[in-house]
Image (cartoon, rainbow, N blue to C red; front, side, top):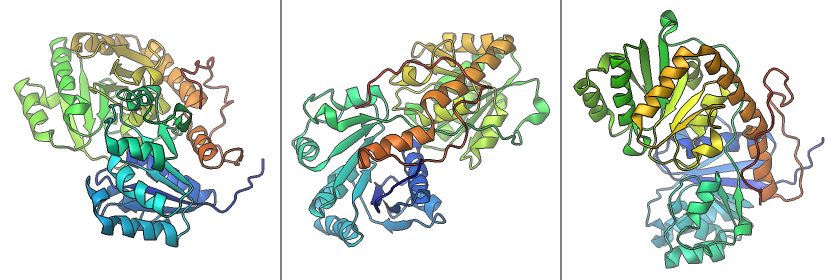
Length: 393
């Protein structure tokens, strides 16, 4: 089909200094919209991994010093206002609550048509006077990337934002099949377990160290790869030494080439305490890796239990370990789960689908010809369509 784009100037505003799932979404969608012919602008903090990663993408970049109370700083709001006004910004997509307060107000003053907040955290929103004002008079649309996030958003005030203005748009990923060097190719007989994320309390890597201790007691030949950096790195390494499993665990730090990581592992493990819509889970599934995770937040919207992986009761390390042991001793089940994981991604979580849903919010009724990287009708990995747990708004 032919695309019929009106010239639209879209600005992504994300002041997070570090790199995470939200920043990856802003990066990937901004690049794709640029490739579709949109005029794309990105505002970040002065220190920003997102800004660094976009520096060679031919996208208009701006840096502003944004803090949580920046909405009280008239100079910051004026600077954002000038960026939006000078560049005729039609749509602003905001990444953080602090961005909603500062950049949202600036966008409203500048006459921006669409002011969209993408919410990726499954935590309640404060029912404050400021929030009630912002979501009634400033924000035109909210994107929640799971049903759980939408529910949490409205938990403390069901009237905070009209439901018709809250859109559920799941993260999207590409299906990856290209071969890639493996980190432990010489140890093919060993079970390679993987985890990736910031080393912070929320991500629950402490449970993985306890799991490693149980696997060691069961004399399983395994390695655990943990990708990511964070404030708990030293304490996690100390805990691994305390449980005498440091030789089984590799802390990889920040991994630039995640393709290599995913091609190196057999199973992906996610012991998080809470998640929004974990993009890293979708990426693991796109590489055909079964996922074992605690059944928290929106995890059941991503992982189909007993089909693309296993969901176990939160905090039950014993059950988590049992699932790892089972898949290790049943390679055919593990292989089928990997195939089903890829099929689920194709049916529900493609980046093309995510992008079209976003464009439906920005420009209703407009159909855009979005190139598809891999056919969704590929007969190699097909299963029945997984029922949608929501009705798109």
